[in-house]
Amino acid sequence: MRIVDVHSHFYSENGEDAGWEIPQAPPGPIGPSVYVEAVRQSGLAAGGRMVIYSGSGLDRLREGPEVLPRVNSAAAGLVEMAPELFILGFSPDPFHPNETLDLMETYVRERGAKVIGEIVPYIAGYDREGPAMDAIYEKAIELDVPINNHSSTAEDSAAIRRLAERHPEARIIMAHIGGTWAFREGIAVARSHDNVWVDTSGWPMVAGGTMEIALRELGPSKLLFGIDYPLCDIDTWVERLERLPVSDEARERIAWGNAAELMKLEL
Image 1 (tube, rainbow, N blue to C red):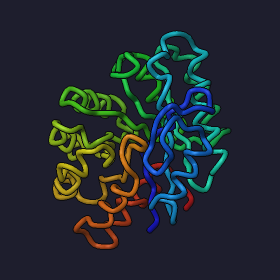
Image 2 (cartoon, rainbow, N blue to C red):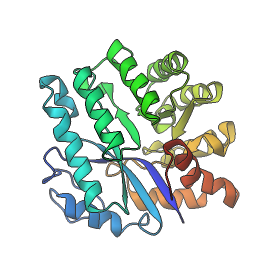
Image 3 (cartoon, one colour):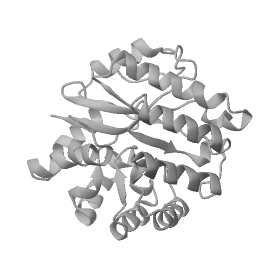
Image 4 (spheres, rainbow, N blue to C red):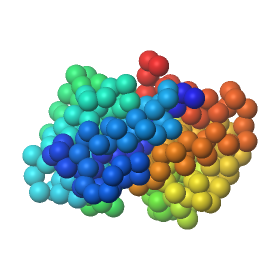
């Protein structure tokens, strides 16, 4: 089945040692070659692609503007190793807005990044709604790429609602359908805003039946398939997608069609 996972991470800051044990891989720290091989051995490999965001170094962005190119370069290097498997996402740095806006331009126009994200203020410690974030949103609109926002609380969903209203031309992907304990708030934001979609990444999508609830309340056109690998297992999520009680047409929209439209992918 054709699949686009809109939400996974490469936990490396230097492009060598990812420092994270992942399913489908031998125990111990991994590098990019092990990561690539693990994805190739998974259920995603047959017709699937994975959006890669940086997963490490984001907690040190405030240390200086030199951190930003390092973490994004590591993710870009993984994509260059296996472009048939991976799609590049660009992780921004609101602490250094001038540098991040310039690098966004380079990554989207020259390196083929298709989405900005994941916006993770709880890790990096930046202001989700400050002037720098507004500038990043406006730059994403200019570059015609969507933004993936982490959301795990009702407060996060409320912030995304305000950002969606301030930037009505932005295409916003709300990660984790709003979060483990706040998915109903996330669903409400997506239902009431034409420019907000939700992704299915994170363990509650499998453990709690959140995917079915979002499907019932939003319909297939608002759902994007996401995994959050390596925090979550690829094959478990793919099997979950295959079991969703929907028509083949609706499953394709969730699996890849909505993502292809949002990110303007040629598949």
